[in-house]
Image 1 (cartoon, one colour):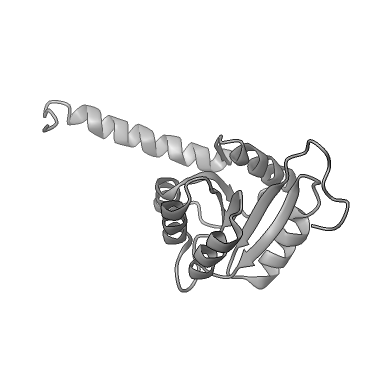
Image 2 (tube, one colour):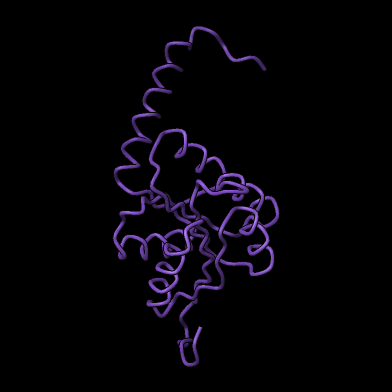
Length: 165
């Protein structure tokens, strides 16, 4: 954060960017420094590095890719959350398969955006997730709701068998 960036009464959101592609990290870093209430505290190129950087830098929000070498984003989120539950995650990926969505949410993601999201969507997601709420891109939400409907219907069909205590 450059001199004079801090504004009185403005909470600065500390962001860690995790992606295995350098050009993506660089572009996100430049973009995420534009809003006055954001500062990029670090970057990581894989899940292992993300765990180390999160431990050292204590970001508020982590922008996390899913598929990376060394350790994927889901496992990195699980390990980071085990150490610090206050850190919030937004998945920023090209993958919108059911498996990725459910695994990421199970690992603690409060936001799920595809890399074709607009700058404004990404900024809104960071602010929303930082406040403790969730934001999932509409196309991903649709897939999530379809999957939940399928699970609910399967559960209703199996309702004749009571759960064991």
